[in-house]
Amino acid sequence: MSDDLENRVEALEAEVRRLRAREGIIHTFNQYLYGADTGYEEDILDTFAEDAVLDVLNFPPDGKDMHFEGREAIAPLYERYRSKRSIIAGGHTTSNISIVVDETASTAMLSAYFTTTRPVGVQGGRYEGHLQLEDDGRWRFKELSIISAWGWKAEVEKISDPVNADRSRFGGRPAAGDR
Image (cartoon, rainbow, N blue to C red):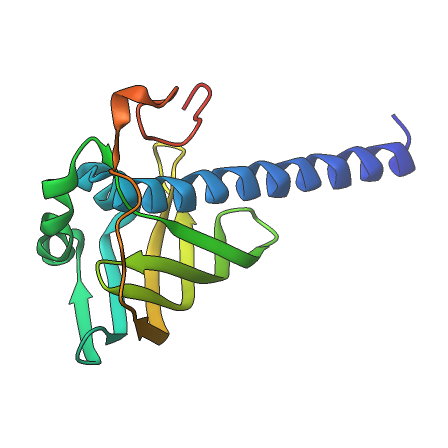
């Protein structure tokens, strides 16, 4: 094989690794969001590395900042989601998602805006984090900051009940293929 062709093949292989990394990162991010909206606490926790750092800034309703080190320390924050297990009751919406994968396709940065419904209103902010490719082939958050930038209380009137996850084609989880 000529040097030029070999260089082009190497460049294409590197690009494929980065594209696969992006897909894996999107899967991890969706697993986190769907887990929060459907009460699958174990799915949420599986998106964090064992030694992950989580910072939750300006958490409503009182604007508290929280810092957690390690998946075990993070777990209690998400226990409350267990009460809505198997019910599609929430709504995390993300946009302006940016993913930057390093040249080795082993670490990455993610940032995204979010809005979410709360029992008495809506809130929004940003997710900002670093992910790593782990030995099992899964991408997990090494560091994640959830920054609540705004929120509004509102008089709300319920117009529908939550839907049971078993009515979802994928059981309330994101489409996953062979993962």
